[in-house]
Image 1: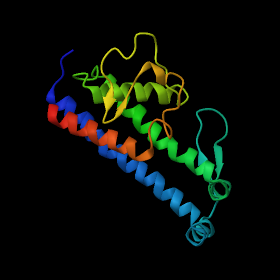
Image 2 (image 1 turned 90 degrees about the vertical axis):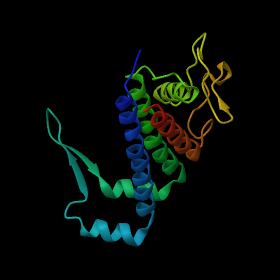
Image 3 (image 1 turned 135 degrees about the horizontal axis):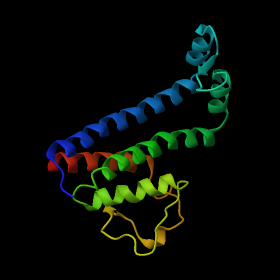
Length: 177
């Protein structure tokens, strides 16, 4: 499949948004753990609920104080919350790369393909027979059949590794464009 330079640039332009989205999620966790700031905010709210509309039926309601309490009460909960935007970033990036058949199939792009699949399958690598078909590595991390079934985020990859992967993909795509 051929690709155009603007397509590679467009996918590269997505990456800063993904990075900033993660920073925003971290900031919210930090603020939710700061009692004076969060308590002030909760007192400021007229209604401590967030209403989400539905296509059918009544609105769905989220309880903001309950969310704050969950964040404050469990470090494990915070870790799981931190995993969501990282996983979403990898899935979204993988989807964008997939629409362009992973451009030149560079090892970093193939690496993201496997990360995306693993995150999408319950945060566990799903390495099918014959995979990886192409080299899939980043720095000293490589996708191998031995990873099948093992966790992706916070095991194979740490938080900083995910951000490094985003940076490396952005640099690669900018070099293509």
